[in-house]
Length: 476
Image (spheres, rainbow, N blue to C red):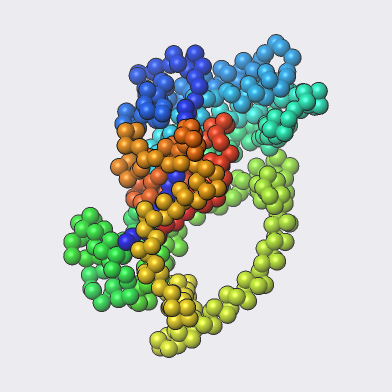
């Protein structure tokens, strides 16, 4: 039984409410630019083609630009409703198109989608800068912020206002003209570099193959992993052999069970060096460039460094607090790691292996220790943690906690044949949304990918699901 990696897409339906302008858009019958006539108004994946995305994104940007311009240049005095709420409601079409595109580029990508992503990234970056560096718009937002007491905002409204106002500050609204221009350049460069980094890792993931042609080199590996490797070899045009890849469902159990230490070293080294092998997919120069640009951006915005910029909106708030937590964990964690290392070295010595414990030894000998010390074999547990059992367990937990009910749907569009679609309802049958579950690794899918499609009106329990047990979850 091979491991599965979960992509969850949460779709609260109906997806969007369209303005009259959005309804009228029909550029070349582009399905992304018209109302969805599908069950539950889900994206019509069966109609969407790669060539639809770029014109749809550019058209949606144009519409959003018009919406923002109307808010910024309104003759009416700024209020919470005509400025903050209006901004929140703007960009509906762009959000929808971007959501579909980013989901597909993450979960079922191809060369065309990656090319389109690089082409539109600078346009998306420019669009966001045009919003947050718009002086008239910022003046209206600041006016509402300064006079917020007179609006008697509830907690949700106050949080919305705070987020909008801070977004402008953190996006350079207070910079001078020279600073704003440099910020635009940095954002444009980062938008492309970030995409390229992820594409390089995926490319090297897919390029690597550990090909085994001797049965003795499979010693220690579970039967289901060997069978999956044989299927992989056949698919790669290498029948009669076994192929292991850098996808987590292959590399991690190999490191855990393979007796052949040299092969463990090879696949571990390849896994660690993704994007660090020279050539067209090497990430070293890009990583340095991104780090430098992020640091420059942070300092331009008045922060000490990128960490200070990022953590301001996180629970830690400052790098100092983050380091304080890590320092608390460091000593006990190091002591535990050293004790585990000592146990591993004893088993290595018994196997005639001298020298230090290497990273590719850790999972293998930890599994042996678990069996010896606790008589626990993960392979014996697998029948109880089949894909179906785990999925049903997740459903049962959310039913008990939140009252959610699940019903599989067969008649809705899907972006890949591996995907299953589930309607989520209240206990009384009231519709909440749809759940797309994409459980298996493939070359077109980024590892551990998870995306939420959750409009503002979505139930808070969806947020709890995505933030908790569903977040980058690995299933046995």
